[in-house]
Length: 326
Image (cartoon, rainbow, N blue to C red; front, side, top):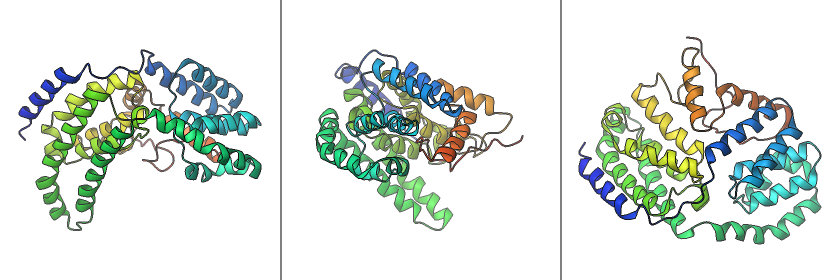
């Protein structure tokens, strides 16, 4: 795969554009994510009041809060009978991008709100949503959406090929050029604007999906590829600055590790189940990017079943992550 000229171009692009965007702020979001893990541990221990206090402390310390935190805090508030706080954090979530149709599908919240509460929310919805729309970069969002849709189109073309050999042939002939072009576009965006994730465009999966497709092309391609290695340090930088969530790093990295190991291992235990010999290494990797341990995730799944809340854990695995014997 001839990618050196592309890398040279991208390095040149970086020198021209790296100073064109201003960092969101200097606050360390690695600490932010570690504070969330503390709150989740409290939830796993049924210490809901303490967990809410932990979330509220976080809300005062950072000028940007990821949407998931408001969703969880609203439910905990309702769970412990703090309805006014629940409504407060629902409205905070709307002003951070929670769409009304998704909110209405939330079973736990539906169970705990009255018709009059929904009337109030609906009256204020447009104003709250405009706060979100005025914060994000709509032009950039449309550009990234276009890249995502282009990616989905070719992925679907591969998916509907039933013959496995024909499918692999299609991927080998079409995906490398397509994917390298996609990453060139993404790097131009990243160097000019910052990482286009939840903070900049209000979406936390378009780019990680594109990167995941790049890292899932097959062991021969991924083994030779250097583009993701070039991008990864930038992802870690933007993680610290609050442009990107840990989930947006975890999925493409999990694909890379899983493909390279031919489905024997994964970086974070999502695509290939962890086992007793590598669980410690997986948890260490998860902690390094601000993800809860596998064991804590599994305890939170139990809390969801017990309370009816949704803690918005990645659904790449259905339910608990099984730790296999080795």
